[in-house]
Image (tube, rainbow, N blue to C red):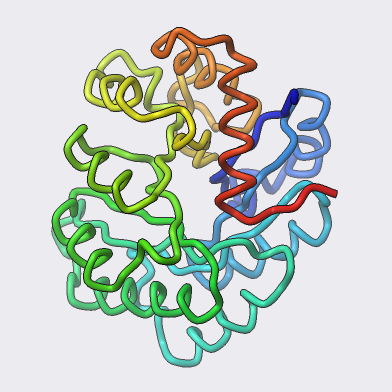
Amino acid sequence: MLRMIFDSHAHYDDEAFDKDRDIILSSLKDNNIGYVVDIGADMESTNKAVELSEKYPFIYAAAGIHPSSAEECTQDNLKRLKQISLNEKVVAIGETGLDYHYEQVDKKRQKECFEAQIDLAHKVKLPVVIHSREAAKDTLDMMKSLDAASVGGVIHCFSYGREMACEYLDMGFYIGIGGVLTFSNAKKLKEVTEYIPLDRILLETDCPYLSPEPNRGKRNSSLNIPYVVKAIAAIKGLSEQEVISATCENALKMYGITEV
């Protein structure tokens, strides 16, 4: 069955799209983009993601608090996230995880926020969208100790090596692949992409960030995903439609979306 492109991780709620959001979103179907999940990164963006999902039939939402916004992970906000997650267009908890990139990081607070959201995912029976940056061991250790495998989900914008990919695949997780794959210095990610079975890959943009070549440095959107498709197809020796169809099926399955 022929499928359209599924952008499994986008941030159309971002202010970078304030001037032309509706124009871009209205153009997606005509450009073979059939589905988008808009990902919450804090309470405000989570609310906006849900609003977009209610406005556009092909957009779904994830409700979560990014590690860089861990200070928002209060009991009141966790209760709000739980309530929001009951919306039928909310298909995941996240993005959540650990990010140790910056020097001044409250690792304890991030871990508490991460644990609370995995716990929430268990309670509401939704998969998790995992953000892990320069925090490979702590992320994996926490996911194992909190039995994240039983809710499943995706490791968004995967940035580690084959060994770590194997760990996540063994846990039943999907791997999110986006524009970084097209970068000339992305040797490790190219090797990981070759290794990962096609039935465990999700396409993503993380827009407005991480535009692929030849648009690197510019605002990203789902319209750039064909460059990622082309790169995966070349690495795996497949047709571009095979990549599109398989990754769409993967995302529909992971997010529990039943086509209408």
